[in-house]
Image (cartoon, rainbow, N blue to C red; front, side, top):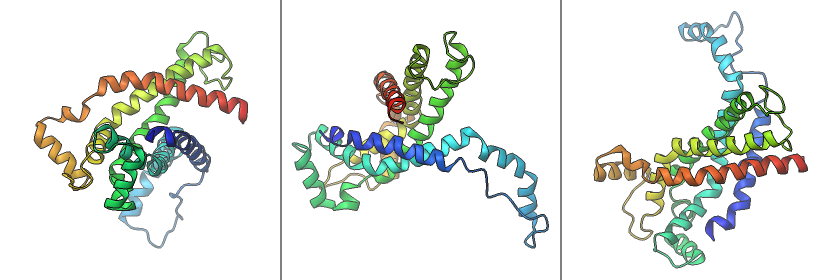
Length: 256
């Protein structure tokens, strides 16, 4: 019930905010335009001038903008997903009976900041890693598939005609691969977040994200613990994100 109750809101925030940030980042001006005879000229500014073209090229690139847009999407989504994840984890760990009971218990114990949004720092770290890699890898896989799929509508270019069978196939495959990629990137942050939010509400073991990571590593003596459950997560991620992104593209085709 916890994830279902915010599923529609969460997806709206993810794709809505991502489109907003994509639109914002289309601007061509950068912060690296300086006057030739700047009165504040110094060694620092001269060094910046020397690599200014390279920096501007990176900042202006599509991949950089996709990365920043995805990361900002993750920040927005963290405000929605943090309470939902905390309630879900508490119920699944058996510390509470149901969603409403858990919500009331969390609020009574810690209020909003230290209760409902406990573990937000860990959550926003996970979301930034997740969606930063999610959208950029999705675009990358779409471009690759448009080149290697012989049935693609436009050879070598990503087609916006979602109704074309090859485009649907490319979208499903790219979505599934993007989901797997993003989970592989953010798995350690997700593991720490789950440990932190699954901690006792009344008698917490961890003081924060860093403490949870330190105690977990000290207990298991290996970094592999942070990738616990990776394979079943990837198996789940592929069909889930293939469906999500293909559904999004289809709905966008009919609505926009």
